[in-house]
Image (cartoon, rainbow over all chains, first blue to last red; front, top):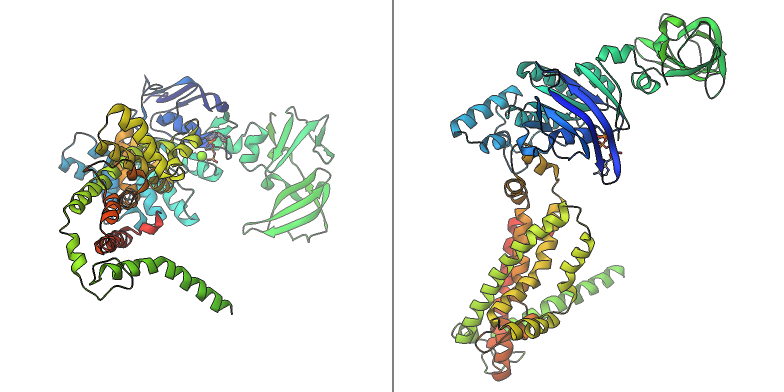
Length: 337
Length: 258
Ligand SMILES: Nc1ncnc2c1ncn2[C@@H]1O[C@H](COP(=O)(O)OP(=O)(O)OP(=O)(O)O)[C@@H](O)[C@H]1O
Ligand SMILES: [Mg+2]
């Protein structure tokens, strides 16, 4: 097992004069499923295309399995890529789509057939061999695209938002499917998504990106529990983020006294971390909605809007009424800027 | 009232489109000796005579050859050109597109004269070769345009997928791009064929003794003999074009591409 199976060093990627990714450093561990997470335009696709060899870096280097591949052509890198659009070949049957890469190698017909059949079986498409991609559902096309890359036994499999075109139910199904395939084959996977819950559910590690740079890197648990910056905290569902200035919590709209000592320049609370019904502060309920296991309040406070989840055991406070709340130390997440 | 106006417009349009065609069919089916409409009685003798005129036979073969090989050559140049214009962010792509389209804008007669004056005369190229080049150049813009429009509908990530599965760029083109634009290529071929076959102005200056395309030969024939066989031949050619377009429409929805 190599800790630097895919290694990006000082990688700078640009389109003409615009730099999309400045000086990226990242090591991917062999056999792991790593997620590139970040908002639209932060450079996820750009990074993937560079790893695959479809985009030549402006500077820096890419190594795979200890070998520098920066100047190696895309078709010689042994990397699989599942496109967001699947990029299936519309003129070929499902079988021929999967067999496409194998047929380019010096391999007997029997061998091609054997490996294609196995690949199609892995993604559960046995029986669909003769269909054209256009005659398959979105989920089936997605699995076909996955099989087409998998049969090549790539060193690394890159997936660019492979689940974004699927409906909610199918997306959950395909998540488990991806995890199953990854555990079964042990292939190293780099997975792009802008959906934080998808990254949390699937990845061994998450790379949170912002403007082409790594904002934070860690296990899903680390990112979820301990986001380091306001950006990471916001991405991980901390909806109430305030500055700390001279013993007060400060926002653009006003301030409240902080009831404990804080050394960090910022503090954040999840809606579930805000205590409602009792506490030293009060505000006006401006919105309230039932969310199954809890009730979601939006409270107008001197700090602006605060989002708070209340247990459904506590009596409902109607919109317009005053509500007491607290921002407790126990649930506060200290952040750097 | 509005209905009446639109009917009138449609009838006039159809009359102008189909009228000449009908006149020619009947003028060719004349039983008389001179080209006239209405014809002096009906017979098929001129339709049959067409096939016995030796010079028509020769010029038909030349025109066929020019249309087939000129269009093939145009596609050989035009498909890669369309591909390059479509896929690569070439500097001055817009200018290249304009230049490629220019033979459609420049009158054919000027193209023909220019080729005669600056190619055939100074270099001693044979007239046949000059005709071939002229027809290739004539068809090229159509080839580039029709193929471009089908390339526009083809996403470029498919080629990248092919490359990542081990294809070279060239293999990705032949294995993935070509099969997916073959309808457009066939449409370009048919359009080019018909354009080349019916071409007069470009060929006018490039016809020499014994080397004439069919339309030019028909002009020459009419200057000497004023019998209905030219009308009969025109009608036959029009049927041929119609048949080709009809089959093409049936096979691949030709009108999508033009
Ligand atoms: N072909 C291109 N030419 C110029 N700039 C580009 C090109 N492709 C991407 N960019 C720019 O590079 C930056 C990163 O884009 P990229 O496609 O990598 O984002 P992304 O993280 O994949 O976003 P998304 O989630 O929307 O897919 C963006 O600012 C984008 O505008
Ligand atoms: Mg992207």
